[in-house]
Length: 380
Image (cartoon, rainbow, N blue to C red; front, side, top):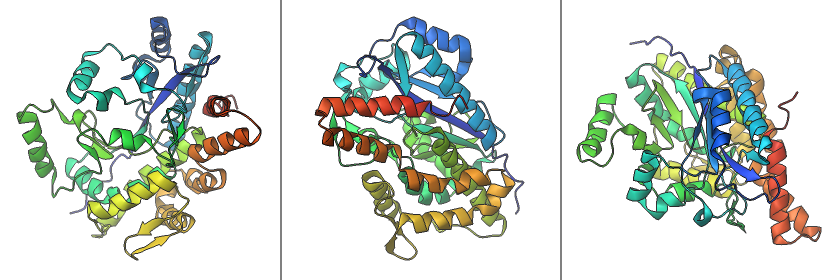
């Protein structure tokens, strides 16, 4: 049976870290007036996060990628302007280059208190940020079906978003260290595969009835049916420092889902692979970003990422036309040209060290670049 086409509306959440412009270290105890001013300017589109050094923003329900871009520009610009009054700056990055989690203060909120009480140090060290994208898919059965298929592409999106190569002043050797921190929590990682929405609900009910969680907001998979909205929420990506790169990834996410829906209408579907195979690509994306390719599971061989990206762009070309985001999809190649935030951070660090900077000075240079890149182009 053919379904009516989903709305494919878009919502984007970004988490930022707050840094002191003088020290470039994290602001572990910002004055309450900062958040008050942010809320006065942005209302429910801004909220505190687990750590006081974090702040989260979210777009409204956007009808297309262009609207999402406009809202993200406004949100970043507003947060940066208000933070500037206090001598602070937001950085759109998934880990601070040298900030330490043991030095952070937690936001006073019952949800966060219960989280750290239950999860202990695994939650207290969540000094990490991400970008979450929601795509409006009203039918719950369709959400589950598309979740099963979209899992294949999660490593491809992660590879283009990496921004967490440093942890507490050390080069981790990974382009995305964030997920090694987040994966210590339960109910994280790749989503399970379900035959129906009812089967999903039955499994969730076991955990709710056992008193392990209140609702599905405590399921933190890389991709999940949203607990609050009729959307599929993609959570695997690092927060992307460059706004235009972020918008291109938002476009890819919604276009892939539309492509899978379009195939379903023709009684076709993307092959669903075992998580153990997708996990290999997830790890490769965390370790290398796009540098060393991903496994083409159908061909059973590692393929250069540029080749995979060309294929993805062709897969979703019709959808990009329909969703008015052809330019954003084509601009995905700019990420390969420019490098992800992780690549740029490592390049700046290496160049600073080669020029005679100490380790601490080189890390400060990375923070300076993150401050500038987070707001680059917002005044255009």
